[in-house]
Every structure is written in C-alpha cells, then in structure tokens.
Length: 165
Image (tube, one colour):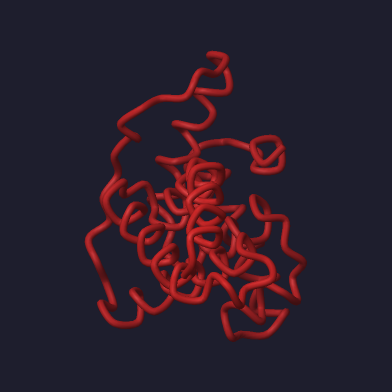
C-alpha cells in the first residue's frame, strides 16, 4: 500500500468506525469485546485488499456478516454477554431508553434471529440479500424475521421499525 492509499484507508477507518462499531455491537448481541474483534477483523481484511475494493463500506459489512456467522458455526454456542458500550453517545432520554431495552432484548434472541433482524431492519437489506448473506431461503428469512419480531415484542414490548428509523 503506497502513502496515498494508506492515507485513504486511514480516513475511511476514522470516518466509518463509529458506524461499524454500532453494527458490530448489534451483531455481537451486546458484547463490546466481540464487536471490537469483529470490526478489527473486517478492517484487517479490507486493508489487505484496499487498492482493489470498489466499495469499502459494503465490503467491510459483508466481511462482518460472514465473520460473525463463521464464529457461530465454529463455537456453536458462545455464552451470551450483555454490556453497555464504554462511551455513551449523546441522545434524548427516550431514544436512550429504547436503545437499552432493544440491546437487552436482542441479546436474548438466538444469533440467527438477531442477525436476520439487524440485516433486515437496521441495515435495511431486502429479504433476498439477507437470504444470500446467510445462505438460506427467502422463506426462512421471512419466517425467522416474523418469529424474531414476535419474540422481541414479547420480551420488551417494542416496535423495531420505530427503533430502526
């Protein structure tokens, strides 16, 4: 990587890290350490291919999705850990409470349910794209999303569409 490419990579990391951490935190079920590992792994893979990647953010997100799925398959069942991020973002009280309730509720879902909801509603991916990312059918995505939303409503009495806005 030459000096200009390295500067571009550093600017990308500096600008997009907070957004990538929020996504990783949701994918990791509230585990700050797992989220940090997920972002670091994705950025390391991007760094090695920086000069060839046309859309760095899309590439990093795809690496994060696939890496999280890979970790689930390898470990089968990691203990679910919930912790708040170390640095709270300024926010209105209602939105902060809503996010805390959502994080707690997401941590109680299975990893697959959580991933379907994050990809579908927070990343706003169409069902076909979610199915492709997870290696399953569109019907599986629909039924998993339906059951996951019902479970979220049961756990926390929240509307995920309101939170995703």
